[in-house]
Length: 356
Image (cartoon, rainbow, N blue to C red; front, side, top):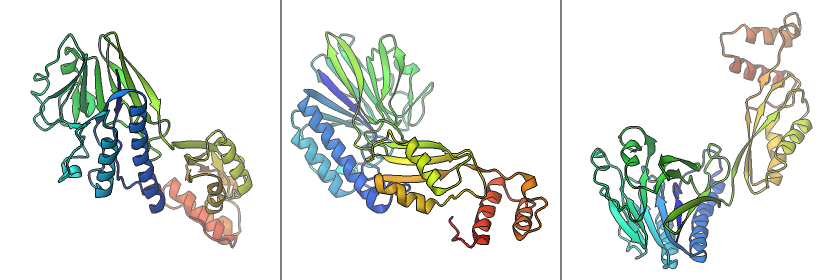
C-alpha cells in the first residue's frame, strides 16, 4: 500500500512581498497545478491515500475559484482518498462552506477520527485550546500499522499548536504525520517509529529555499518505509556573492552569473552580496537586475556588503568629497546609515542618478 503525506500548500497566499502582483498570481496558479500533478501522480502510481496535514489554504485569502478547482481535482481522482486535517491558518471552515464534498475527501475534527485501510489505521485530530486530555483519548491497535496526523510544532509539553512528543512516545505509533514546518524534517519518536514534516509542496519565498515536495509511504509485510519526493515546479535559491575587489557593473554581473550557473533559469534567485566594496564600485542594481532578469524567471538582489573606507582616504582630503565624508562619519548615525548616505552623496557629487 502507498500513501502520500503532504502539508502547508497555503493556496491563495499573497506572496507579493517578493513577487510582483502578476508573478504572485502566476505562482498561485502554479501551486494549484502542483497539487493537481500530485493527485495525478497518486492515481498513476497506485497510491491509496493522500494525507493533507494542515494549511491547505491561506485562511485570509480563500477564493471560491480555488476551492472549486481543488474539489474538482479531488473528485476526478475518485480511486484515491484525500484525508484533510485543518491547520493553524484555517480557523474557519468557510473554504468549502455550502459545497458538497466529494466522497473521497475525508476530514477530521477536534476529537480523534479513525480511518482504516487494510492493515493501516490512520488517526487524526485538530488541536484546540482543550488539548490536555486529547493524548489520553488516542486509541490504537497494536496489530495494525498506525499513522497519526496532527498539526503543530513538536514540543516537550502540551500547548496550543504544540504536538507533545512525550505523550505520544508510549503509543503504538509507526509514523506521526505532521504539518507546520515548511521544510522536510524527520525525528525519532520511539523505537522503530518517527515523526515527519514533509514541508510545503512549493516554496513561497526566499525563507523557503531548496527542494520541496511530499513524502511517499509504503507498507510491506507489516513494515512502513518512507522517502521524500521532490516535486516543486520552481525552487527558491539564495546565492551568496563575494564582491570584494570588484569595481564595474560588468564584473558584478559576471560574478553573479557564475555563482548561479548551476541553477536552472525557471527557478527564483536572490543574489546576496557580501564582502566589501569601495566608493568606486558601481552598485547600479537597477541596471544589474534588468540584465539578469532577461535570463531568469525571477531575480532580486540583497546587499549585505560593507563599505571599505579607510580613514586615511578622507581624513585630510580638502575637497568637497572629503568634507562630506568627514561630516557623515562624525554624525551619530549607525554604520549602515552612514554607508548609504555616503553612497548616495558620491553618486550626486559625480553627477549620476541616485540609485537607492
